[in-house]
Image (cartoon, rainbow, N blue to C red; front, side, top):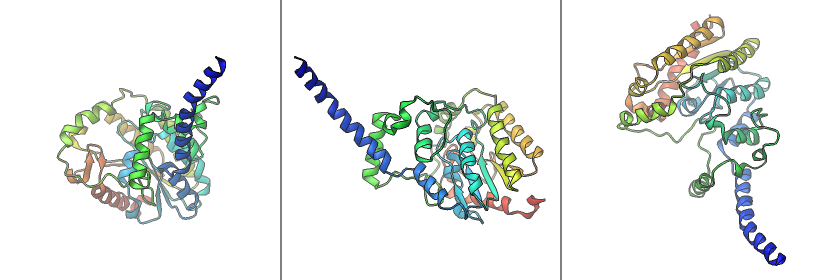
Length: 310
């Protein structure tokens, strides 16, 4: 009876182990945005003059191709200021020619807590594929040794399907800019705005932790004679009208305070920029290819203005 029982256990476990091993092999061997960007920055330390950090607003919205000096977009989807700081601290001492750091500030950037739902699986990829020391991952967390355990099985399967279809899961170019938010008509912006605003509302007004993170980056940049640009990217007016006006005012005043109190900081507020057109947007709060080109050029003109060095 015992032999029969053991045989059944083996028959049950073998398929599971095969699937687990296959997924693990996929995550270890197939290059992702995380591993790709890590490789780019490590091989470009002496060339990078502008480092772009932030979440998807930077990832899709700031295209280094349209900046005058060599830039790398090290942002990523749902990348919080927590990871912006970790990435900055890991690489800054190797960036010998760094002149500018651009950080996008969105509606939830300053209130976003560490280790919340956006970090549930991403934190393990920062650790494994970008070689970050991530303090929010506990010493006895098994998932840090197995990327296949960090995501739902159906999400992993979808990712594999994408790889088999396209031959890659990398969604950015050699400068780190996100390439798959292509030009759209903008016809659904009004419909999408309500759901987007509801999804982004965290009902938090405590910015202290993230302000401290920004101050840390700013202080180090000041030591190395590097400028910091806090950029509030343009969003659709219908989406903006649904957001908490008190929180928006606090975001603006917080960024203005950082700029006022630090001579190496500029706040570029494009949130309600009058030059924004529907055809610049992929969805209510992200630029498409056309919009990214347009607004990267606008940001470049501001950064390149000699008057801003005074």
